[in-house]
Image (tube, rainbow, N blue to C red; front, side, top):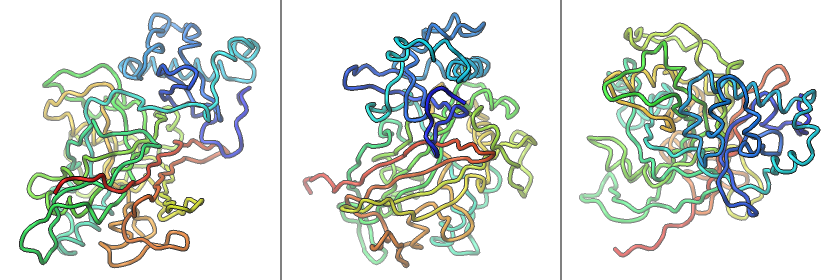
Length: 420
């Protein structure tokens, strides 16, 4: 237990301790912090207490305005930092508990903080690793007999996304413009998307020293480069996406905005919730094989709050353990061709959908391409309406412990005016 009060049901007990970047009205400088209960521990104020054998010469990483430098250290450094933090925040440790002046300087109420992106995201890749989502989309657009493409069970499919439009929770986005083409139209038109969607995803941040061009990361060493995870909403304009995605995949239907939760939950915090990997048939090729459990039991949900409503209405619930390809397989495949990765790179999972209709991770699936309505309180939706607020929820739970990710919230604003 911690001497810091952790309210019942909090996402951030001492067993979690996720990292983020924040500022306050009284100090606009961006600082690295750790969430504990409803507080933030400012690591720049306690950097001198990281005096273990590995970090005593690396305390400067906690003075930075992003987590990239800390992420760029080795896994043993991350473990030592976690052990130091758990000791400092323990109810039995006097160093911080009994130093009123240091506590006053080091703790900030989360309600008074502005959260920022936790890292400078140099590159962003989004995978397509849910077999249920891929099957559903395939059935809609190609039919049940050709739902999965021939390569899907052989490799983790992915595409290179746009890092510049990744935003932290709480950032509003505007309905995008683009080319739209109805099925019965002879030519496309230029206009605003009519089929706005969320995608329930998670993502992991790359850590460890940057790899060199030409190097790959063997699957046995991938965990040395997986720093931690966040929730991710890959906002999607389905009508823009439908017209543009052949032959090279998503572009403007995705790149207008992607929301992530600001707190990175480390793999050490998630370790107790690792579960057996899914059965894969056919067996993956040798560079993608691993026997250690690296799937995760993370409960996921999406809520929508319409304009004028005060309630976040749940529209789907699923679990991250339904993913077909593991994080290790995603990273091993990403680098097998010699693609170099750097600390702070972000890797999205792809939409996480379960096998039942209530566990589908997008409005495209929940409404089955607009054929059905989805209840949102006393309203209904087929896709997202202007001024709807979408929030992603994720947490692990077991043995009386809840490890959560905080909010991943964004509001869809009306389109900005454009000259046609």
